[in-house]
Length: 241
Image: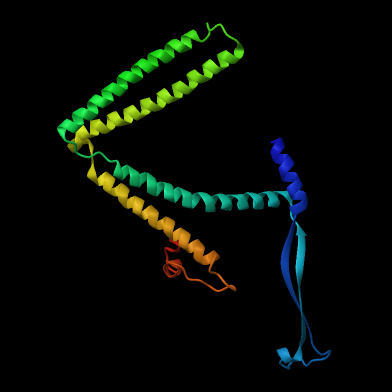
């Protein structure tokens, strides 16, 4: 809270003013004009004035504007990143989906998994013994700290290997009962959704490129789907657009 205050209040001190473009037009006519006479633009003398209106905003307005600006920055960054994550996540899930395996290959994979599990059991027993022996270690505080750090690192590695072994076991279990536990429509839906996310990501990049890089002298650029969205906005279901 203190750090936010130190950053926020100096920003408000220098950025609390809003410059609003203003346009004014002053028109005068002759002193005496008949009430029945039609007055046109030729009868009036107009003087146009342009300038900038400097307004001091209140702190809540400044805070809302700042939060809105930061929100749009996060939206512009994380939206395309999230779309790419959806594509890669579903794509690799489809690539690594369970596939039918020959019996000899299945038995070989099962034997390798059994060896990994046996090694993990031995590693787990060693970690338990090391943790029990740590309080009785006769050494300085630095040596105890290093020993504790080593045990924690090995434990994290052990937990990661356990999760990988569990995932491999579940994959072999799905392969063993391929016709009962594997739904081809599920993985087909994933790859379709991945292609859809890829299309949205590319469309977002092209749209931003056309509207930011190619926009010259205020020229309007009609990107993909703009015509459809404009037509849709004039229908009873305009909220979709």
